[in-house]
Amino acid sequence: MSAHNLAPIPFGLDGRPIIGLSSREVYQFGHLIRSSETLLLDLFTQGLLSGTTHTCLGQELCQMSVVRALQHPDDAVLSNHRNHGHFLTYSGNFTGLIAEIMGRAAGVCGGIGGSQHLAYRHFHSNGVQAGMTAIGVGLAMARKRRGSAGIVAAVVGDGTLGEGLLYESMNLASVWRLPMLFVIEHNGIAQTTLTADTIGGSIDARGRAFGLETWCVDDASDDFLEKVASYVEVVRTGVPGMLVITTKRLGPHSKGDDLRDTEEMSAIRERDPLMKLGATLSAADREEIEEQNRQFIEFVR
Image (cartoon, rainbow, N blue to C red):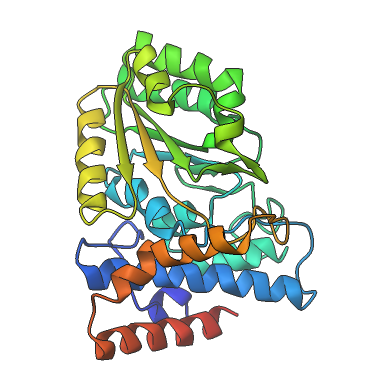
């Protein structure tokens, strides 16, 4: 039996997960992503995985937001080193992701790509900072030339704002008026260095300087997913854009490299958008969702 048959979430005819905007649907999928990330860290602890991986703990809703809104079959997602939430929202292929990171043939790339380098239909990720942004410009240009309604979303972290290739890509996307959305997941820290110590000025001003339609939104706001979906539709009209999402990561950069103090981490846990969303559900609904997810993760394991 396939993992799709046991997954506690619906899938469309194109094989992609269907994630509505109700609190229950969003919490169910977000909790499933978090459970998967926790499983990966457990497997590392047990010595069953090697190398490294970058989880999106605390950023689940942030990573779901743009990808769940990309419903056209020609839409493309280009991700980075912290990519699991993007990939799972795009594909729903939990077994393929876990097997890939474990280096198994059942992995989405046959166990060759690992955590950072995933390729699945129109989803591609790469660990090189800004490495996918120029490729995204080419993909967006191709879509524009053939009259496709598909768009390209390139996701980077705020630490990538020090890479020149990102700005070259933003410039060309603007000059050529391409259907491309640059997504900045602004979690305030690049590995162990605070963004405030390395970036002058404002992040959103960088997008506006290149003539990109620019939006800023917080993944802890009540209407976060609705806003993001509306921005995606603006880009679909042929308007290149940049979306800055304020978020926070609960876990370390990789597996253990976290120097943040106890007070800061307590504030991040208090802010946790996924747990706050879960708290809006009835105790019975939440317990049902979490038990279904637990059983599914046990199957994937």
